[in-house]
Image: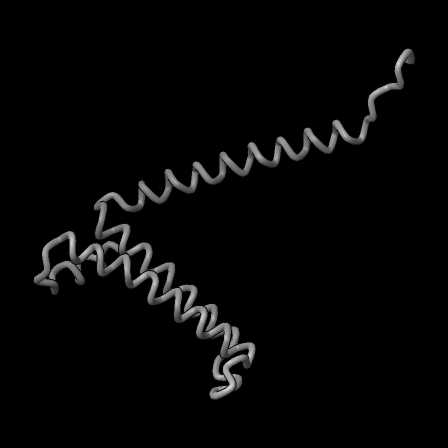
Amino acid sequence: MAHLACLLEDHSTLPREQRILLQLLKIQEEAGEVAEAVIGAMGQNPRKGHSHTWDDVEAEICDVIVTGMVALARMNPDAQAVFARHMDRIASRDLVAQRETTDARAANSHPAPATGQQR
């Protein structure tokens, strides 16, 4: 991704802020192409019918991911570390949520004893 980001940077004459803004807008453009492919795969466009396949949807999702990673690389030269830290936060958050769900299930599987009775 860094190589692609560098190529884009080298070929632009716009100020840095505008280059980043346009790259961020490109993510939305690519997401729109995912939506178009889903509509086409489901045959929901009356003019086009089944114009796309689910393989097309997957390819468009990959384009969104690549475009997002290029945007991150253009914003921060240490994009790989930024992404790794973010993934660590997601993993930690998911582990906490999983632990809370497990604890809640365990608490619900052992009803409290009736008043005056011991377990």
